[in-house]
Amino acid sequence: MSRFSINRNKWLKEFIMQNPPDFPISNKCCEYSKKKPAKNFIKSMEVDLEITGIRKSEGGVRSANYKTCFSESKSKNCNTYRPIFWYSDSDKRIYEQFYGIQHSECYTKYGMKRTGCVDCPFSPHIMEELEIIRKYEPKLYTAAIDIFGKSYEYTRKYREFAKSMKEQEKEKKCTEST
Image (cartoon, rainbow, N blue to C red):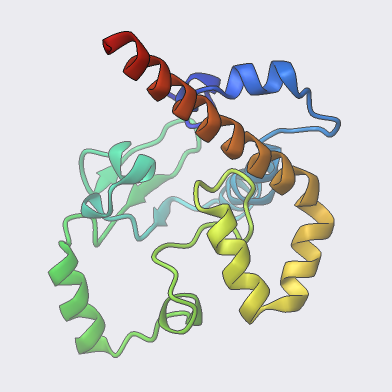
């Protein structure tokens, strides 16, 4: 099921019906900021091999899409190689120590576990991420609020709604069982 499917988020349909958004919502940011530029670069530079750092053990949608460290693509006329695909978490730590890999302050200072696009409204951890960014990157926080503020507020209200519905559901079950 797509992560953008309304069925992945319990009570979302009900929330939207009761609270129609007054702003546009889409995942076009991903498409036009990352996916299309990458495809255009591959095409314009006549790239025949794309190398990426996806690991099977990291989990998530990206790693679940692949079964091996190599794939051919006739559609983009470029093959993909994932050299660290089979690395376990311990393999990764050994590699990082051996080569002296220095990680982003997002991990070492801010305490984030994983990063995607900064302040993505679709992130399941957006509220926690916003607090981290507010504390460590106040100018970025201000820009994010200016761009996605309505989306963040809508997400907060949906989560409160879902929590309330879950509590009502729990109370109903308790009442029915007595």
